[in-house]
Structure formats: structure tokens, C-alpha cells
Image (cartoon, rainbow, N blue to C red; front, side, top):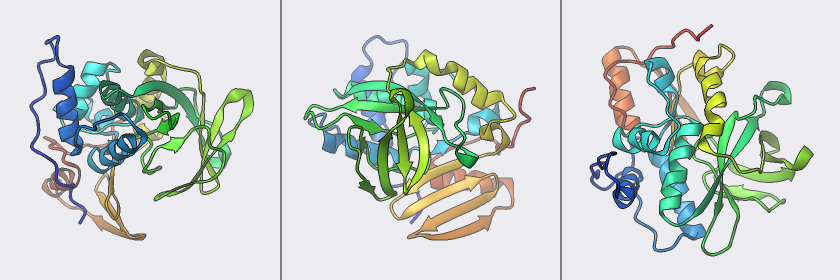
Length: 282
């Protein structure tokens, strides 16, 4: 099955003007990802929260092509991921996930990373946001990430230098220049992590570049992708790609109604029009 996993009934998001919204925000977020409130902010809870998030909230760049704003503040991020039941790209997904984790008692630090591209070339500073997470059982620190698309299903131990087995492959964290860390999947470098703490406003320039530059892959293509229990499902424009147990299947969707129905059925996104690639700003 590639439809969304069953979740508890949605909790109505609180009025953002209310002062005491933390508990209701958390309940709504947990309902969004179909996860019970953990009794303790430990490694097992973090692992479950990350996996449920990946199974429920799609990695998508549709706002760029729908002309929707991106506001890197806790309230607007929760409004999008929880209230509007949308997805997002790294700044939005990991930004919102950080709010959830903090509300549950985890210690969270936002980290910036540069993604390795073709030929091993590093991308721009603040290319990616990831999270350093401290747990109540002192098992970490952990690298948690729900915003890198097809990546590790479970958090990775930041201090471990050997291979870490994950359903998505074997991951390794290696020392790099100037105290940075390279995150490697099956022998291929994914991104270079700067371990210095960052804040949400620090990512504004990277988010602006990815939303506007003609060199950004986000401005040149549409993507909506979600982990499934047996693989992954991705909609790129009108092409629906389903991977089940390692087997890839493609289907070209025809009418706008068919595309909108696919967004709803497979990703839980209720859109009023089909996203189309918009020309990047000059």
C-alpha cells in the first residue's frame, strides 16, 4: 500500500494569537504524524518520532511554484506543517520538527550543512538544516533529520565513527576539515555538517537562494516525496514513481484532476490547483 498510514483524528490547531498554545500545538503535531506522546524524551522516542514524521509528512517544494511565502518562524512553520497539513523542504521540516522535539523535552540545536553535488562539489553555506538532539537517557548526541528527502530513517549517533546500519543503507559520520563532519551513505558523501549552533534566522539567505536562484534544483523542478512502509512514493510534476521492495514503477498522470487526486491520496495534500514550475527570479 502506498496511501498514507492511518493516523488518529486531526486535532484543530490552536489560535496562534493565544499565549498558552504549547500543549495543544504538540498534540496537534503528534496527531499529524500519528504518534503517541512519548513518556520520556529518550532515544527510542526520538527514533519513533523521526520515522513517523518521514512516513506522514512529505518532502516537497510546491510552495516555490505556487507562489506561497516561506516564513522561518516557529508559528508559521507549525501552521504549514500541522495546520495546513502540508510538507516542505529542509528549513521547514526540520524547523518544525525542532519545535515539536523541544516541546517534548528534547534538547535541540539547529546545524547548517553544505550538500555534496555532482563531482563532489559542495553547495552554498546554509544549503541544508539538520538537528543535533540531546536525549534524557544521555545516549546521544543524535543527528536527526526529516528534511533531506531520501535519507536515513532513524537518527544517527553524532559521535560514532563506524558504520551505522539503517533501512536506507549504511551511514557513517567522518571528520572533515575545520571541525566539520561529513555524513556518508553507502560510501557516498551526502552533506558536510558544521557543528556550531545556529538559529532559524541564520538560514534565511540559504532559503532565499533555493527559492529564487535559477541554479537551485528547487526552482527548476517539482518534487513531492514520502517514505512508505515498503519503499517510497514520489510525484515529480505529472510522473508518479513508486518504489516497493526495491522495484521501481512509473506512471504518467494525465488530467489535472488525476494529479490533484494523487497529491491527496498519497501525500494528504489538498491543493486547489496543479503546481507548475515557475520561472526563477533573475
